[in-house]
Amino acid sequence: MAELGIRTGDKVLLVWAQPSAPAALKQYAEELGAIVGAGCHVSVENMERLLLSSHSASTFDWVLSCLLADSSSIHSSETLAEMARVLKPGGKLVLDEAVTGAEAQSVKTAEKLLSALKLSGFMSVTEVSKAELSPEALSSLRTATGYQGNTLSRVRISASKPTFEVGSSSQIKLSFGKKPAEKPALDPNAVKMWTLSANDMDDDDVDLVDSDALLDEDDLKKPDPACLKAPTCGEGATKKKACKNCTCGLAEELEESKGNQETNLPKSACGSCYLGDAFRCASCPYMGMPAFKPGEKIVLDKKTLTDA
Image (cartoon, rainbow, N blue to C red; front, side):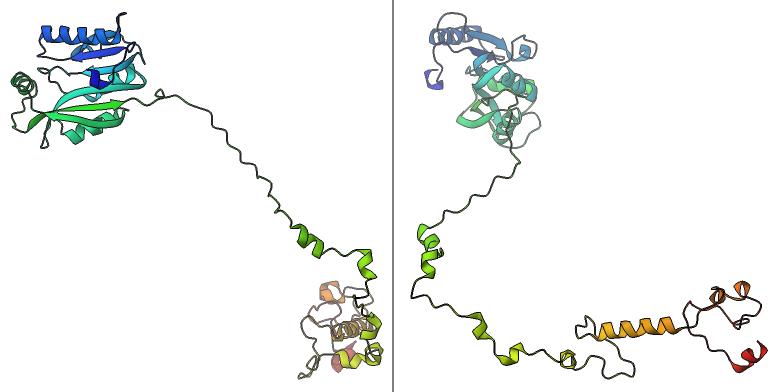
């Protein structure tokens, strides 16, 4: 048992199953007690009574199951979950179980046993050793499970409980605020290169250009408005039409001429001639004509003028 790593003061739960000899079980428990020291640090429990026991959660540092040579039993998922419950965080589990080399309904394979331990909440699951079953253990296992295959062997598995309790929580501080962007450090030489002081303006090596010298006489002349128009603006059509986004002044010229035409249109005396006959006077020259838009020029034939 020294190779397991049990130390003085550790609390150990020893789980046994049939057909364990009482003398062998007593001797094994006494050897464990000598290692952990006095104070009832070793508890002995039968596999079938484990789920009915009143052990508190996170009580034991070690759980040793079916380690006696003549002991053999199948660990159910409920049994493994109970062992994980009574172990302290970081506690160790060492168990022996009969496994088969082929798939069977009543006996697990070594891979299935490792998977069952992981699903029960254990970690660092490792197969330590593998050996043949004793005749007593083999006979008891076949009687209990009804398995008659010849590929049975005994494996020892070690596992540990995580260092935290099941269902424990811890607050995580999250910051979703935007961190201010760090400005890159400026090179002092670069800053000095792009800095212009008043003393630099008086330096004889600095040649300043007179802005008036950049303009000649032609640049100072007022341009002719006709030359500012685009060559194709208003050309190629019977009716002048300004280009889109016109900048030559043709658009303003057309708008101005349109406004003059609207002011020259004849005004109605009653102001409702364009609405139709129902709104016209008895002597309206537009009587009998359809309604028209306000400001629209209406041409009357001679017959209408004579009748009026």
